Image (cartoon, rainbow, N blue to C red):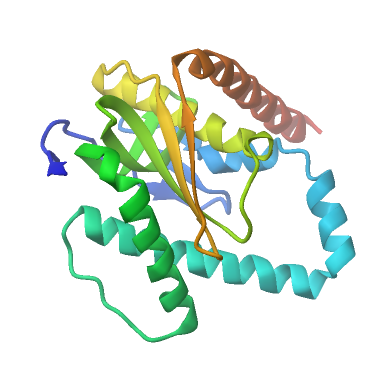
Length: 230
């Protein structure tokens, strides 16, 4: 894996949470919502609510918090690996689990990454949205947006539409900022049971998910406008 972090000069896109909502400030001074905020705000939460009702609020909160802790730790381990930084280890169960999952992603997924242009890159698209992508570079010889995911249980493709929308959103942002023409993305996922999954978005799917993504952006903006006028 070649670390070519100087290929693009990514500008600073700092977070601004003064309003209580995760916003990013673009170089032009626009305060824009994050990709995850838009997806969360426009997502059908019926299934999630049914699950919470089934397991109970306390158990649902415990599961969410544990998954978030494992996911964060796994991401940090992978970030340190990509950037060739020393990872401070501890012996907690969360870290041990996350480290095993990161090792699976390194072995099964990152073997196909030949060149890295950016890690934890903050991206923005015009005055519409911003966010942070895990990795940008060459995957199987083609420019890709690359995202790492942890999951409690293996996923089916039909369950992860929002992950594809996230890839499309970051691809458009990277293309806007740098002039690239990225139309591919990949989610590298590992379950708590150490099962690896890879979900790839090709050029044809990119058009489909781009259309869906910008519809979600419009839906979010309409919701914000309505709340301000109510």
